[in-house]
Image (cartoon, rainbow over all chains, first blue to last red; front, side):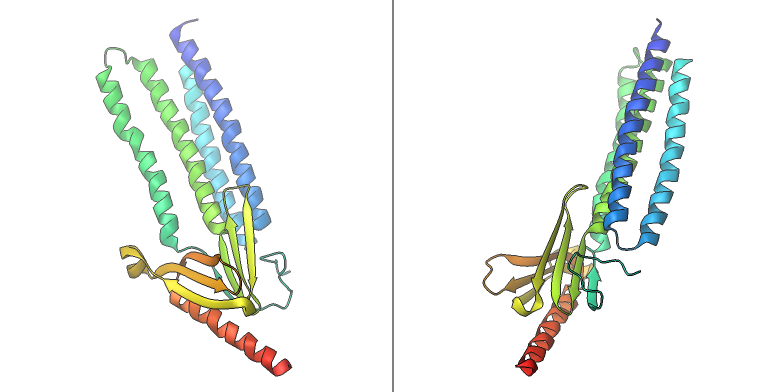
Length: 70
Length: 179
């Protein structure tokens, strides 16, 4: 296994672990916001905007992790 | 349907103040996140330049990739900071004063006191930003309790103190008329 492959596998592993961890924290935060928040409109709008940006960031991370492999 | 802000809220209970901490408090916390965001922009070029013999393309790609993971984590942290700020509420109703403290994601403390038990209300504005932006702490002393009830960093603390005292007097008048 050469260095590029090792780095690529490491990158994919980091991506998977961080994606699971960040998604868990995000889902927990959204759950708490919806349960305890005062305005459903505000919490929904902010949560949706946040999730869209987060998914975009995950997309970039995945793209970079795959690039590390090649 | 009207959503209850605190568990013991009556459907017809009139709320006079529903406040959060001043926006500047959120701004200060987000500034810490922003400083953490900038750190890799300074450190990574220094590290890669210092170890230029070691840093081939693969290593630098990995370092920049890890920086992006770190930035994603900071973005999530900023969301959590906002959520905690958003869920901290100070409420003054015609009958009670309620302090909802969101201490982290999984800990919420709701403290209530009956407005009739209020003995002394003090508003406090401290510091340059507090004075300029008009935010501060309102201390509410109750009969018999040694601990003071606190609304930390609320906007316009003098007005909050005034509303609490006015409601206390109104409640006292109502009770006097009843007996």
